[in-house]
Image (cartoon, rainbow, N blue to C red; front, side):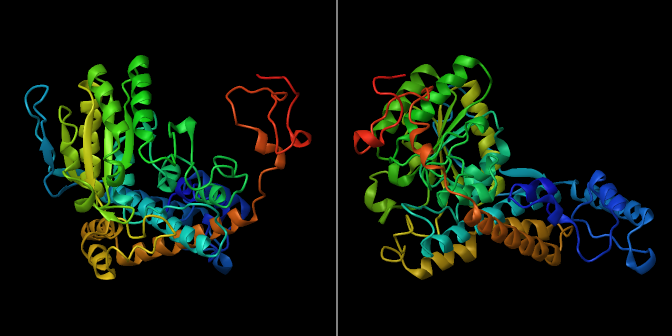
Length: 440
């Protein structure tokens, strides 16, 4: 079952987690909350099918036994990674070929990735319903990268990415309702409804966007890495970009500086095979993106396997903090077109997309891992799917019902530290904001 914390991040009140199939008194309801049993079905034995304290104690004991089973370690092998110049700074290390995990951990990964998938599907529907204005780029198909990276990183590590940013806003702590609210131009959004799809942001969780200019996040990532090194905090900066941005000159300029200064920077190329409508084979003379750092080591990893991405990211962070910059290419795939204005089938066919879904889908792989442990059943997975769908649907309605920003918000967040009297001119002088002549 989904944890209360995970449900809350969907923007759904915790009270919704209580089962409506049994009768619970206020006193027993409080005990259930205090014992962390919200969302756990409790077999009632009291008069008229009411829940009693022994029922709650029995459910707690059953949950503890189940949790113990789910926490047992297990090892899963995955496709070997490929390295480039890993001995540049000394002896070449051994790249991981397996991951130690547990059924409980796998279940958490699946729940999070499935929530990402449903959120992006909801975004697709909202866009087609003309609720979303402006550009919109979806992440479905690439959830293995987002989840795997976050599973190995900490919230003190920094992430900066491109305009395909919805899921990182979610994994960095925003609720689904808040993410969708930003897409709909609502005040509950992380940018107060003023940024939209491409400009998510959460500085208190070290997420720096959401950047609409192709490749612009790469030098920003290098600057953030410099800040980490200056602070000596033992953290690193992950600068994410796609194969379509891989030929940008600013990537190489920033990487050169990062190498000179030995910054804790990880360049993350999310290779989803197409830059807009152009395949990597037609856009890049060398499409082994992990080798293109030249003097900077690189790794190629299966981006459709959350465990492979997680183990790779552990290696990447350690190298970045202890040695210096490194490039990684996560081999992944996007199911939608480049943006919502791109049908995604003019430069590739439906069979290609279907074949990838059938053979490599990262969400389905995580589900299969869960079931293969024999500690999670198909019925439990279906229950999770049902609950996630309901929670995302509730988040959609919450986002629709949320108010837009007040008109006065148009004048805020323009300059750092601006005073309320800071003068900004409107379309004509009568609609301006602030006091004329005030420039701070």
